[in-house]
Length: 77
Image (cartoon, rainbow, N blue to C red):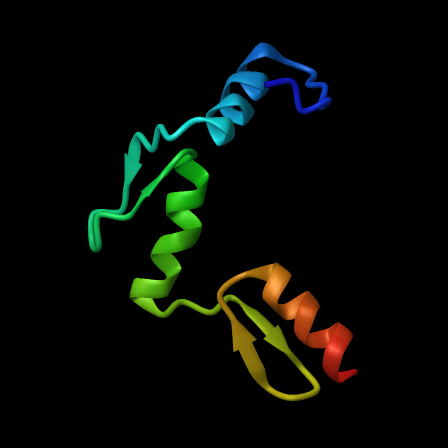
């Protein structure tokens, strides 16, 4: 399906195209969750190792994803 998105390179298009399929070629070695992008697995693995790189200095709370810190800041600050 054409989602209307445009990409600078064909490789970016191919990665995006997997979103529209059931293909999940990358697996988490810990829980075997399948995803369509290798970088998603790297982010997902932070759950298992409890790595929290993004810290809110005001509340001293940390998050595994920058987007979660951003959401926290939008809601609490």
